Image 1 (cartoon, rainbow, N blue to C red):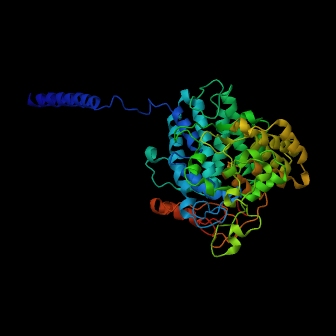
Image 2 (cartoon, rainbow, N blue to C red):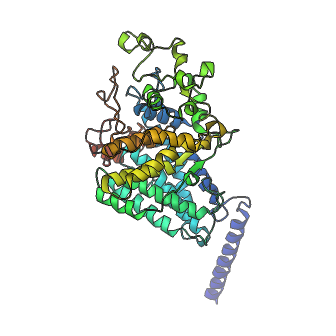
Image 3 (tube, rainbow, N blue to C red):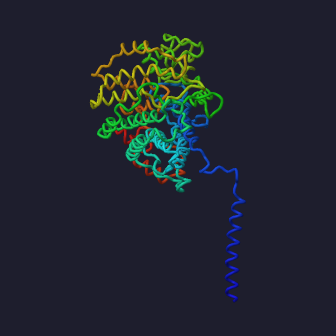
Length: 514
């Protein structure tokens, strides 16, 4: 009888404890908390697309890396300021080189992984998940293109898998997976499934899913063409796969249209440059001379003399790379040059306020780029018609500037006149195609540098400013941030050991072996 009584008491206690525990759990729930099942992942797509153009941390990576370094490497811009804009001189700027790495994992990778995980295996987000896969490839392609081996397969998984020191995947493995992911994701987009509402690129398009298919195939083309030095067979395979499925006109361009008002929506380039020292950043003489010598109708759109508000083409003068003001070496003092402007430094051209303002758009991936890449593939391997793609690329590259507003409009007739004056010459095809690519990618500095490293065109003359860390050669990669030596030392050291020459600007990555 006693044992039965004890059993009843125990069972009753368990029941009461369970009930009380359930009640306590219910009481301690925050009724206003937002959980994964309540959160709309469409908002994360918006976030990733915006952050891809620059972070809300004052667009620091744009200022330090995009304009302070990369744009100077490829001679779109130059500066006499060796502290902030040293890219045209290849000086040691370890604190700047790694800013894109640090910021991209915080502001792009983390929300992008959240988007991927929250939409995985959820039928109501079928297309949104495929877009997440494509955006993931877009984000990681740029990071690996800038640094080489990077955290990829384990990146952003601290919350989901408690991985806080991710391994650095080899660039070859990353590209293999990127190509697979974009190919599968693009094929999986379904016209009859969801139409994501957080899409900054194409939400307003008449056929959003069709636009994303073109975007995915164009991104696939770009990634495939990165392999021209190391795996031309794979490159050709994917180029053939996307034939007639890439962007077909400037209407297909992927654009983030910024809005003035706050640090989330406004243009990051304008925000960072105007917020710091815009007077020190000039358009490079290499770029200005290219436009002037070719009677390019883009010149008055992209360039101006700020002090006099002069946009006349004859007045524009680019700053030669590799100079400073003053110093104890007259050969590097810009004021000793016979072509030094009568107005002094104010006489050099700057990025026009037409294309550098808080509401200016970012052109993420364009029809012009696509056509130049197809022209390159046609010239190399006979896949398609090189002249036809070159012609399409030139016309699109000149007329796409109307995305910046009425002041940037260039007529079809002016574009055709430029093309007529610069017809395709197959004997000089690769140079011609990729020099036009360089001319078209002002404002898309990362992509311009990547394509220059891939092709060697245009043939830029490097500077050899005293104290440079490359031996007077144009950098081939960016250095990892010093923070990685502390926060992820073992994996960082393994990645550096795989670089011939170590973590230097001159070390070659897998896609750029020579």
